[in-house]
Image 1 (cartoon, helix red, strand yellow):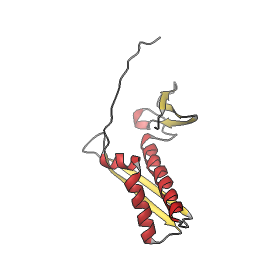
Image 2 (image 1 turned 30 degrees about the horizontal axis):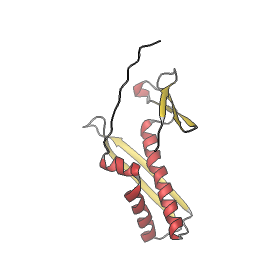
Image 3 (image 1 turned 180 degrees about the horizontal axis):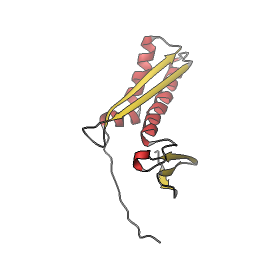
Image 4 (image 1 turned 90 degrees about the vertical axis):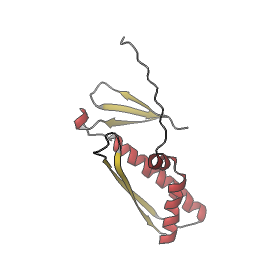
Length: 137
């Protein structure tokens, strides 16, 4: 089961994200008081969707014996101005090289069917929250 830890590092709007033994720096946007130089939260969400797409599409193509030579996934999102805290849209575009239209559609369809990240974003997964307050030392 995937698990991450995100920790403030003493610089306003900059965070250390850790998963297993891997680490990356993420920033808040300038409008939230961050430097906005490292990966932003919305970009990380799009990156998670694209990474899952690559993994599913490539493994499915291998299993089917298809000669898929390249996959490019681009994504963008836009905030919903009428509903703060929500995206108005998330758009993903796929370019698959080495397969025909029917094969490309089937491979992307498999991603849409089995990727838990896509499923959670597109259908809205329940999220639980736990809060612990600690006194400063």
